[in-house]
Length: 574
Image (tube, rainbow, N blue to C red):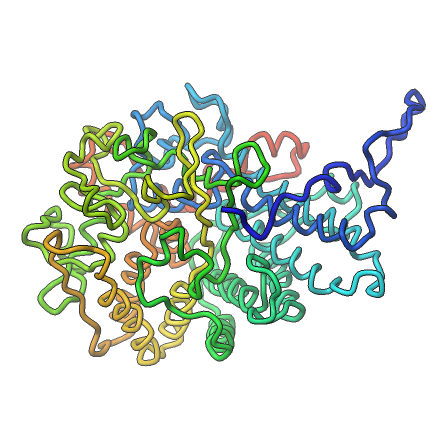
């Protein structure tokens, strides 16, 4: 499928702002554009497109779909693959303690995936800053879309910085106004955690002020005002949970929470985004860019590039059977599957859900389970002609990780969106970064923390009602569905529990869970409870231990500390 955005790299790759100053080199540079030549409408637009393209230039070693860092560390998924040595760095995420600042010391990979994540995000930021440096000097009479394009670039920079912030906490702030000397001497502790959040929020605020409304945005895939509002709301929600130097939540900023509610109110009032009727449509290629998708990475195939701009970030996650081929990563845990069990009232079994493993013949479940997890004797991706008859044959190492399949990021093997590169299956299905359901749940969370749980109740019930009506594609006689709504919340604690459970189910395996736990300040207690039982089910987890004040964030890559000349400071505990 060809997408609106193709890679427009000819001008960008050839462009060099800085000329070589060596006396020994007197040859005129070839295939380079001067700064003035770049300052045309077409070339300025190409610089913006180049920044967008880098969002989709990810890979399973540093994906934008945060399944390794968001799900493996959260107790929602096992690494999968062919045992611990198969990308050991991701095995280390599940065990916590093996994480080290120098990821190249991980045998047998010898690839620092942590450093690759850091470099990938900062390369995207560099593209944005280079484009802004040129664009800031262009008169609006030459480039009428200047303010909107600047806002798009700052939006993209905000996305990359948000990703860095939730992974590393303390990172250096680099923008287009800084001189090379300032960049070289910048430290990851120049700004406090709250000041860094302010910088990220400022980029999204600029988008709110200068981007068109979504109904006025001319091209699919470009950032719009409501997408900027959404990311600003998300930034402020995270910032509201103030943490100390040991990553423990010390207070919650009510002013930030009030602004979250106001921003989501504005998005709702505009009316462009909303919930799709069937939950399934969020995870099917033919429904990408639907009204629930607030912002997604545009992917493509047959676009002139060698392999297409496909979903390489999840290329490891396809099962070993069913017409795929490789590689059986990202295996849902029993704990995660059990969380979908419901009682006679259709509500979650908060206290007893994990007492026994899910039995499809007798346990009632929330239907979102079968949109999220493929399992034995059930259809894969809504196709009753593609039943997972032997779960172990679909798995790479079922004895270690089990045989569940994470389905949201995958497509049917017959999808025309599919591309095959050796053993790897990728598709042109877009990667959703923000869904409208997520936005609504941010508002509900803010309301609950503001002691306005009665206002949050209908939001949570609205999400659950949509789930209840999303069984049409799931077939008959495979599961016992029973999902109800909450009549009221007795107090803030009950509302908070319902909201946090709802986020786990609604956004399951989409890469958000671990970062939610850290934001709320409950990572240690939640993961200790998870490991207490899961270690009896999966032997490889025997030595797993989450250390509070350390494992909430990744270590600053040792390579970056070395390159900074010691200006960067390591996160606590590493």
